[in-house]
Length: 316
Ligand code: TXA
Ligand code: MG
Image (cartoon, rainbow, N blue to C red; front, side):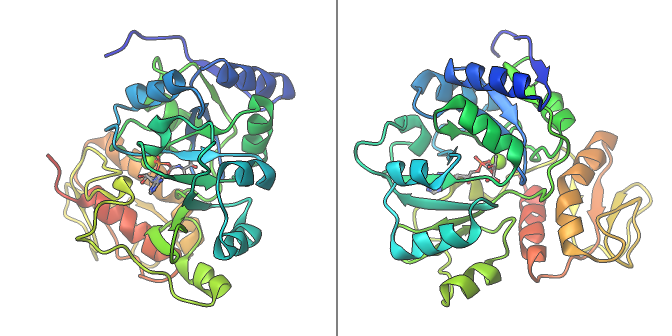
């Protein structure tokens, strides 16, 4: 365990954003809000800064990171865009979409970010705070979700502080994330492939491309290691598709199935996605086993069920 450092809590004021940008440019670790989840940012061109991300998260180093940039011009300096990638970027950036693209050979990105590979995961977030910070930092920012490895992704500053206080230099508190689920990841180096379901439903992406997305072959080498079966795991045991709960279980409801807390009483999947990680954090804090009501397997429901299945997977 590394020595504890003082974690500054910053606001979204221009002065604080400038300060956070300076900390990033100087190799610091700064957590910041995006519309999906809070990210743990570091200068993507600085090996030491990127290594500190892995240390702070306790993350297995084979897991590559998403790089965040404020605009298309910066994105196109780092990667080659196929016509399909251009189409997706036009339609969904800024937003909850990450594109995995062939990286330009002269790109200054640290090899630690790509885990030594030739592709780079890129995203322009929609959050105005995130964009202001990326502009202030003046360097591409590598940022995984700001949680200790294997834990539930943070959607508020307090989630981040619970997991990472004393291990990071600062956090910009921009309030709760509006989407609440990580970005959808599309591999765009050959035929577009859905690498991770997320904040933008895959049907909408398929509509845009006018063709279906490939899904990775489970026997193929791991392309998005974050897709390891047991990920996003709360400490407590999790039971899914539960129409009702046992007495000692903390029940998370959905729609008509009322729980101790409920993802969305009106069965609204967007509301449920935004609440998901917050409710998993609350459930986790009780130390009780957790049961979750059935969620329909349509639209954002697929990403929610994907996260829940990972959270429920047996782990070492
Ligand atoms: O919404 C999000 O995507 C958030 C915010 C902070 O932007 N970030 C996030 O990052 O969820 P992270 O590190 O928790 O998940 C990134 C995923 C991992 O599954 C990783 O393996 C995959 O992206 N990834 C990164 N680079 C990749 C690459 N070159 N090829 C394939 N997968 C990649
Ligand atoms: Mg993550």
